[in-house]
Amino acid sequence: MNERFLVVHDYGMGGLWWWIHARSAQQIIDTFAEVEVVEDPEIVAQFADDNLDEVDIDAPAMPPGLDGLREQRTAQRGRPGYGALAGRELVYLRRPWDDEPHIYLEELGPDGRRRRQVEVYRDGTATRSTPDDWPLNPPIDLHDPDLAQWEISADEFERAWQQARTES
Image (cartoon, rainbow, N blue to C red):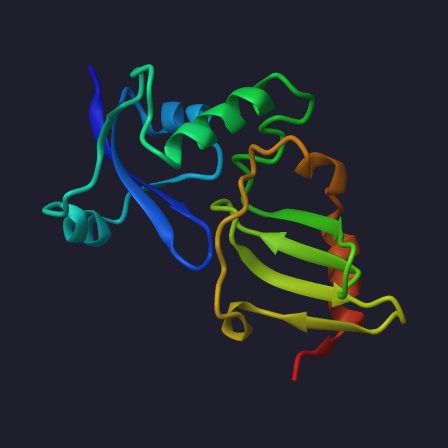
């Protein structure tokens, strides 16, 4: 028996929203990359009368936006590291970037949103910040198999956090 779930793909500057009929919230997460199942009753109520696409999770065709997220999840599912970080209370990552800052150390909550962050620059300086410092904080998909390679310990993150200066 399928239930109706409010689902969002939050890409930072906005989001794509759907009503998805599925057996469970977990089935949705296992089927589509980079989505959240919205469980906050106030937010669900806000969208109750909106004209969002209604999607059956087993349908062969998906609306634009959701189709690519299903393909992305299908490609991820069989790879090593898939889902390795999901379901944890806290996750710590050390992710390299090609630009400045050179490295991001991130503390992520169970929803994939950053709770704290350290930005390390090529010259070795580091700044720390929290959600109060960021205009956007879209979730990171903790099922993404590419993330597992960047996992670090809580101790490594805490050392970097203590050594970094506060963002000004």
